Amino acid sequence: MKVLVVGDTGFVASYLLPALKDALPEAVLYGMSRQAGGNPNVKVQHFAGDVTDEARTAEVVEEVVPDVIINLSSFSSVFESWSDPVTCHQVNYNGTLNLCLAMVKHAPTARFLHISSLEVYGGSDDPSVSVSESSPVNPQNPYAVSKAASELLLRQYRISHGLHYTILRPSNHTGPGRKPSYVLSGFAKQLVEIKHGRREPILYVGNLKAHRDFLDVRDVVQAYSSVVKSDQAKQQIFNVCSGNSYSLSSLLDCMIDTAGVSVEIKVDPKRYRPVDIPYIRGSNSKIEEGIGWIPQIPIETTLRDLLAFWEKQICQTQGIQEV
Image 1 (cartoon, rainbow, N blue to C red):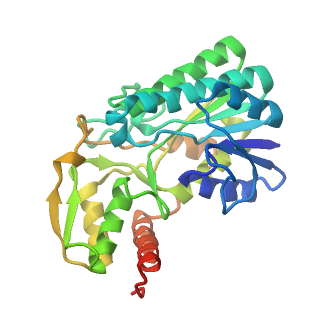
Image 2: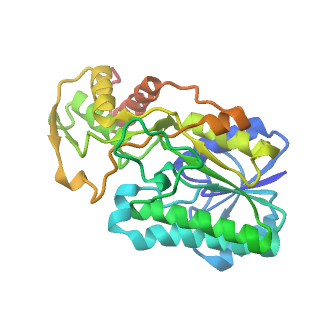
């Protein structure tokens, strides 16, 4: 089996590539991203190329002729999608289109593993609501619209060209290595900087009332690799989520306790989104019953590991003794 991971130098790919090697030891792994040289931590045959470049995408697919394409190349920030919807749609929708075009021409029997998002459901005002794969799609931000549109595109290519695909809708996921522009990693970085006197003891936040379904990235990649192995996953849609909805305020309180610091919380209006869904919680029963995947890592472990990651990063870069 030949597996092409598009976006192989990103955060999720740094965890997915080793997971694929473990789950599919016979598979030959290839990667493609704008970054030359590929992922420094995992050796795969890497191709430099931007998924928004139709010609280059076709060249890579033609050379590899993969059995599976996993598209991790994504404009993945909901917050930034409000200020740059054009780039968001170019990467998420046009990139998907370019891969579809390349597959139809050069790898018509391959399977497309499309990474969508739980955001396509739009969330709810009711904390008791749990969205399943049969729930209506109701995207409420540019990022979610780009993902929902890409799903429709895949369905059209299945009808018109017989494209094989699996759509995965992951919830918010984080873990060591996540950029601080993402909420929980941003909290962790600020807390460690406060702990070591690198910033004043004020932690800046956005909307802490929002409730989100969070997963550890290490659980997410186990779901992805399990789906790649499964014949039951073809032409299916699966939520990849914890089944829990956590308030950002409760997660922040847990991180503050773990970090052992005293901080003042200040709301930064610039961190608010034009539309912020109150509650998102997914049901993972379909992927559990169909694939056998369930999350294993408690949210408390994820938060602790995020803090440990930033502790190491900040101490190394600033010559501080780790505490």
